[in-house]
Image (tube, rainbow, N blue to C red; front, side):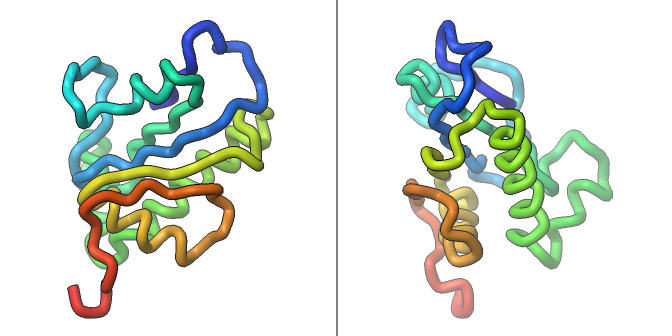
Length: 136
């Protein structure tokens, strides 16, 4: 799901926020949830382009797609997410120098892993994630 800031649908080089949903099997749906956990719309209203991806392992895309995170819970979805970011930058929609990543629970754990794999993000917003994967 890609959320544009209001009135910015044709804009280029927008600041990008990548949100990683909290349960790897819980897909992002095209709906508005009026609660504190749904900050994609709030961030977009503040000027961010928000990528809210249904990466490998998200429900609703078949058993094979769901099962692909069983033994690699971060690396396979990570490739999906980074390829989405790369495409937005290549198309000139997102600014390659202004992007961050955020998530909570599994999303937080994912971010804690992701920032050890790349230095591309300007900031990360990690909540309630595991930080010591070896002992978790």
